[in-house]
Length: 380
Image (cartoon, rainbow, N blue to C red; front, side, top):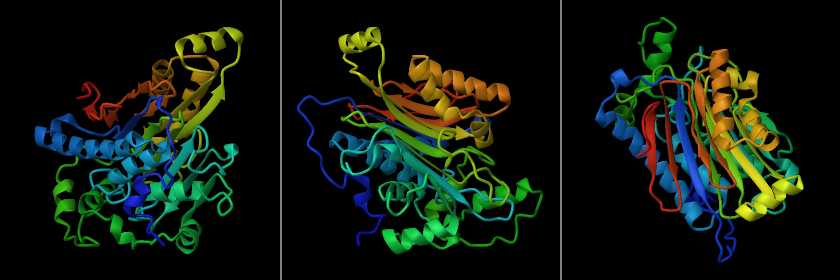
């Protein structure tokens, strides 16, 4: 069996013919929001983050430009971020109060992928939580989504989910020490007012050590995520996180909760006037939107932030940017720091935030990745 961590995860499993009249495609990503400090920044540090963000964008773009599925592009992008110790997911995930890593991930599609027409439209997506031995949680979310007979539920958790992934999906589980980085461990201990020594592990990975000295975000609460639109009009949102630094053991955040930290949906436009306008403007009768959030997840849960954006676009007919900005401002009013990335079926992108920064980026048909970090940065 091919390993789920192979390059095959970054391309469509089944190549689908694309008509000569291609639709739009776009990919937008985030790498966490809320705790980065400009005072501790430098051009070299920012360049390091932007280089990884650009690599993630290019990985997803390679799928979309080849006519691939939105879900494969989003997972390819998120996998790059999960593998980089700079970000709070996979390698480099933060610790809970007990000094353990409990990871979460999710995937949601606006409609079933063309490569897997057997997936029922009601399937929508799946969330995973309390993972402790999965190298790339985003890949596992994708695998479970594509296995409705094996996992018919909307959320799975813990050892049972990981044992199932090993026994039935061919995933290789990692030792929990895989997630460890010295920088995140020291932040965890300092956050609890405890001594940083002794260290539970000594790492020999020079790349990990190099990245740890460059952290712009301290005691992070954010996630990594991607939202992609493919040429067939499918939108996929993929999100992955280590959660909040020093969260309680067993805490479940917004990342695996459908409607809170992630959302995707498609609908048919009603009303003759709107149908006529969509026909004239070339939008068609079907509309879709996808959202991935990052920040203090407890507030995203309380306010159902991700689905609120989708419903404001669908039922209030708001432009994507306006709907996303409203939801992020709603978070701010309630005391929640963070941001969202969102895409609609016309290829519009929104990336509002209410905090000091959000690692973010977008790539369109021209293949040029554009990234930003702080709240007043211009994508470049």
